[in-house]
Amino acid sequence: MGQGWGIDPAYGGLALYETMRRTEPDFFVHMGDQIYADNPLAAEVALADGSVWRNLVTPTKARPAQTLDELRGNFAYNLLDAHKRRFAAEVPFLVQWDDHEVRNNWFPGQLVPADTPGGSIDVSLIAARARRAMLEYCPFREAEGAAAPLYRSFSYGPSLDVFLLDARSHRASNGPNDEPRSGPRTAFYGDAQLAWLERGLAASRATWKVVACEMPLSLVVRDRNPGIPEGWYEALANARGGAPLGRELELARLLSFVRRREIRNLVWIAADVHYACAIHYDPARAAFREFAPFWEFVAGPLHAGTFGLGELDPSFGPELRFASVPRDLAPNRPPSEGLQFFGLAEVDGASEELTVSIHDRAGARLFAVRLPPER
Image 1 (cartoon, helix red, strand yellow):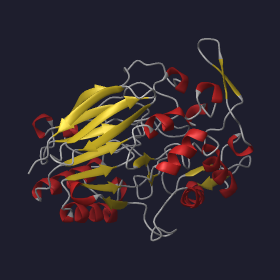
Image 2: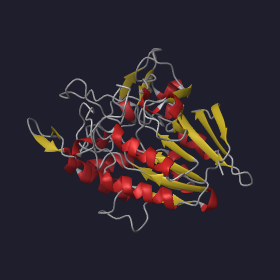
Image 3: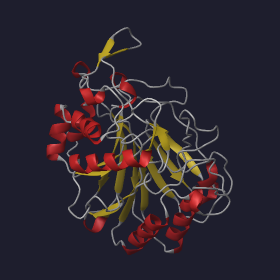
């Protein structure tokens, strides 16, 4: 539903859900932006070829959502699509949130325009409402109540543990992201979440440890919202290269912990950036070298505007092995152009080899890599 592309039955609705269902997955990691609370829908959008995209529009999708009922209506809107209902009936969801469940690039304590003229509202209030709506419309374990953290883990036997992170609730304000030392201004995951993840990774006996963070590690995401100063950053990377600074210090802490504890077979998955790519990290290419090589796989969007490939910050030695789109792609490509992507991960039961692939809206495999486990 992002960037104005809602449900148009003539273009297949939320067709990627049906494509994913046909792969018969054991579970689905939905990495946030389930809704676009801040992106209202117009009834019609003109396409480049002269045709028209016709959105199904409900009252709560006709305006930005800030109240609890409006946010509930955004989650309910997705269930108007038969593909999503069928997928949800067959496949367990592991749910995260990102920014658009609340507002583009939000951070706790941010003041944003209210839904009444001339006023402002603390975005944390909207976030509390959005969290409640998400808990009402998405499957969470009973222990994961209104006060529980959204970071949590799931075990799938001896081969796989999945760690779901929350990169929204515990971050400091967006900013220049260039602090030389860790402190309150550099928080991204936050100390409590990082300590929880370190304990979980150290205790895991699963062959593969998959860390799911809705925001990528080295792809540069700038905060260009109205009213935001030039040079502020939304994700971890700060486009400076060199030794880690700002939020990058938390990633450096975690990666050095993983190396020090000899934790093997760590893989990251991410979304947020509206294209798909595969990135390999190696300390031999990095300014910061206290880590072992690993992969990060980025996939999306499921049903939103597609954008061109972003730049990579070189601090942690990333190498782009695959990208689903070029850098010069015209912005906000509609789902009708087929540039919607998802990732598929499969563990071989005998060899425990992990195969990760990236697919398009029609299901075509665009990229795949086989990763043998380190023993």
